[in-house]
Structure formats: structure tokens, C-alpha cells
Length: 233
Image 1 (cartoon, rainbow, N blue to C red):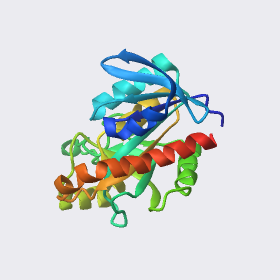
Image 2: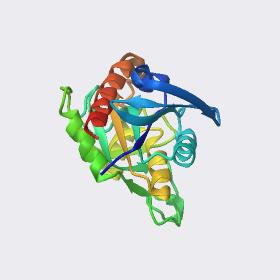
Image 3: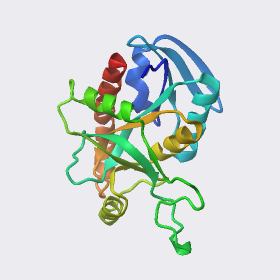
């Protein structure tokens, strides 16, 4: 496929800093309190932005990228907590799909993570973008990269029991706070997406020790893959 203009999102400044530093011909626009930076990276037109933390921020940012900047695809990059036992800090998860783990209407008989009365609650990433990200992960990245489900919720998970539940009940590979919102908005608009997450912690109660220390390292790993993806597009 031909990708003409790519939307790049990170929730925090650390997650987009390396991309911003390399953006050529940067032009900034602010909408809804979000700074959108247009420019070129590796010969591709991109629009880079920091959405802010959480699903609402991510959804607003994604819709603005689609409506205002007319992007052809969206790549969300950043850090996450590992759910799959084989993942270690610094490893990469490339989304096969995304789901909101904090949608809980089980009291009315809906399975956990199901959006009531909606046709869809699990939102697949675009296969070509998934493959492109996976191929990029095999160049210049020495850690483990896996394809898997990204779970999102407006919660910072720090409980071993919750980790077990999310992995076993919803088959999550990692958990974070934005990806499924991006995925749902992209699905509603027919825009391809992929989420690339580097593990900053094990989401197991040790996050207060790991998160700050490893966020910069994990963000560098995510950046390496996004950079290589753009070279291959």
C-alpha cells in the first residue's frame, strides 16, 4: 500500500521527543490544546503529536488527525506494562488488535471488555502496518518483539492478580491507557492503524521502581522501530 501522510502519536513527551528532534521543516498548529507538528521524516510526510494520557485524550487527538490533517494511517508509539509472561522490560508488542479492558458491564451479562450494543469491541490493526512494524523490529533491535493484543484502560495496572486476569481472560500481551481508543476511532473512520509499545514495567506492583527509570529506554526502542518503518514505507 501507499502511505502518503502518517499520523504519529505518543501520550507523553518522552515518547515523541526523539521523533520531534529529527522532524524536518516542522510546522506547528494547536487544536484542542494539542500541538500538531507537521514535517518530514525519512522522506515521508508526518504529523506528530502528544495526545496526553488516557483514552479521551487519545480519541480526540486521533479524530483531529483524521479530520484536520487528513492522514492516511496512524501509528501510536510509546510504553506499556507487560502482561505476557515472556515479555521483559524493553521488549516490544506490535498490536494485532486492541480492546478496552476497563469496559465492564458484566452485571448485565456482557463479557468483560464488551461495549454494550456495539457491533465491535475488538479493533484489528491493519495487517500491512503490523507486518511492516514487525519487519522493522528485526533491524537494529536486539530485544524480543511479538505481535499481540494491546489492552487499554484508564488505569495504571500494578497488581499481579489483575495482570493474570487480563492475560488469561482477555488474552492481552500488554496494557496501557490509549491504544484501544485510537483503534476504535480509526475503525469508525476507516483509517488503518497500528500500536507499537515497548515494555517499561511488568505491571506487577514494581512499576513505581521501573516506570520512571525505563520509560526513556523503552521510548528509544519504540522510536527505533517507527524510524525503520518510515524508511520502508
